[in-house]
Amino acid sequence: MAIQGKAEDRADRIRLGMVGGGRDAFIGGVHRIASRIDDHFELVAGAFSSTPEKSRASAADLGVPSDRAYGDFLEMAEQESQRENGIEAVAIVTPNHMHYSVARAFLERGIHVICDKPMTSTLADAQSLAKLVEASDALFVLTHNYTGYPMIRQAREMVAEGLLGKIRLVNVEYVQDWLTEAVEETGQKQAAWRTDPDKSGGGGCIGDIGTHAFNLAGFVTGLSVEQLSAELTTFVPGRRLDDNVTVMMRYEGGARGLLWASQVAPGNENALTLRIYGEKGGIEWAQEDPNTLWYTPLGEPKRMITRNGAGAGDAAARMSRIPPGHPEGYLEGFANIYSEAAHAIRAHIAKAPQPADVLYPTAADGLAGVAFIDACLRSSKRDAAWVDLG
Image 1 (cartoon, helix red, strand yellow):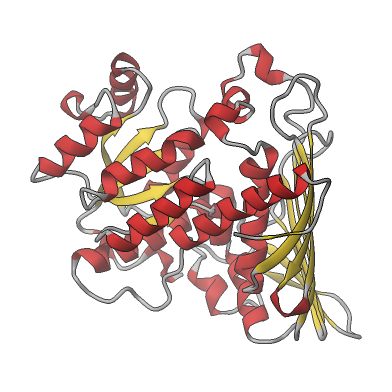
Image 2: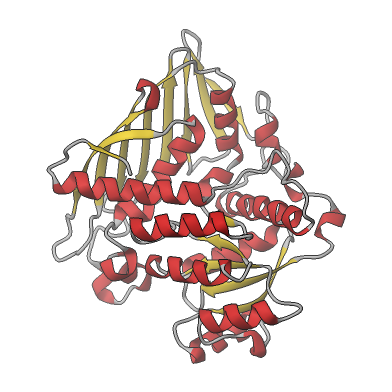
């Protein structure tokens, strides 16, 4: 259970700021909880909302001092970079269209960035930001939080060890029902910006949850998609972005993949599932039952591997906090990404090598995700023609 680190490692919490995530913002609250579960971070500053008044009100809710509640992110980046006790990292939890400009402002001032996905709303911005990260002395962490689940690390370890043999088939689904009706027209804040191309970018469902599915499949298999054929559909009348996506994928080495993402499938709350099959066996995992991984060696009965149970390896144990049989879930998996970021940031501050076992999504993963969205949009506009990524 090494993810929590030693007590002395947490003696000085990393000073964290936040852009976005004010009142009524779902993901901001998730980031704050995740950042504190292992006690590595302390929230000390923020530009939490689109107006100074709302930002100050959110800061008061969160116990952030009024002199560190900023009216906008540029003011925050400049003033915090000048303070002796200024923030060491910033969490970006705004709508997609702001990710690039906010990340740039803090990276240029040497402040580490922890950014929600997708990395940017356009491919050009993603390419520019990736170059900026390379040139910066600061770290960039992308919160593809599902990669923090212990049994996803178990699955990745099993694939890397060759237990499945050469990968042939990858099937990943992320299916929800919350946008089955036009709830964006009722004032529902989360739906409003996610269906607005000016804030979300060119992709709706494909950018919001399709990128999670794409990233998860690549994280576990270690394979890159070379070509894809995508159909993006908008079922709800008047909606400006896609709400259902089907993608066929051709991976390097000959593997084939199928991705389905939907936000208009009644009866599905947050059904993220992954199935991978190779020459020697297969694995299956579902996010709604995250502590279980099913493994089937060819010609043998299906086996259930549980978090910290018999058959689970070191990679899963490192992401776990409690004994088997006690459930860990979404918030703990998200916290694992923050803890990985903390280990990397502390090593950077100490000018020491990053620990070899620390693993988190980077700007390269972010660029790949935005390139995936771009390729899906290009393919769908050409009647699901096969297109190259990039």
